[in-house]
Image (cartoon, rainbow, N blue to C red; front, side, top):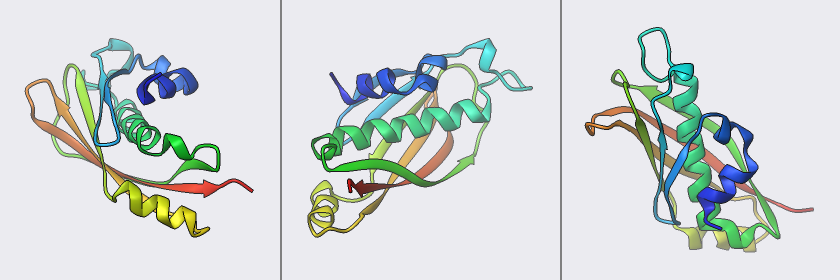
Length: 145
């Protein structure tokens, strides 16, 4: 099971929005929100909340791909998120997530008994390639008790 399939199987909101996991590796996660009238805003594009969920889901997929081997000893949790909407999004939109710290550095902190934090940056784009938003989610690996 890929990281994207795991996120889709365990997070009901992902299924509600019909998110499509196109890629989910430790280097990059790409998730698409298909154009769906039920999730449009007042101007006919995807609602801001749907785009937030799209981007956060992409960040979750890369976290699972990068740190899935640590799940027996730590739980990944989103600590905070910031999003900026820069252009009108219409039609299908895609979120591409990348890790902001090397996996080895985060695991080393976990090995030291710390609760590491690391950013994931996400770019949201329309089908024509225009960037419509950017998001940063700070994640932590909370060691199991």
